[in-house]
Length: 56
Image (tube, rainbow, N blue to C red; front, side, top):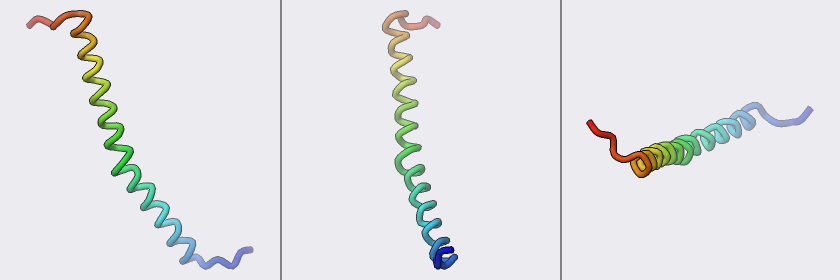
């Protein structure tokens, strides 16, 4: 058995969870949003470039 205190282990776990949450909120979600919107715009652009503008 190790001599670690439960509170010290709990604090480390909370810090890791906050780091993971911060990564998800500030880096992952914006990056995925930008990638999704960019790829959607690129697909629409390619459709219009090779197929012409869709008539109404």
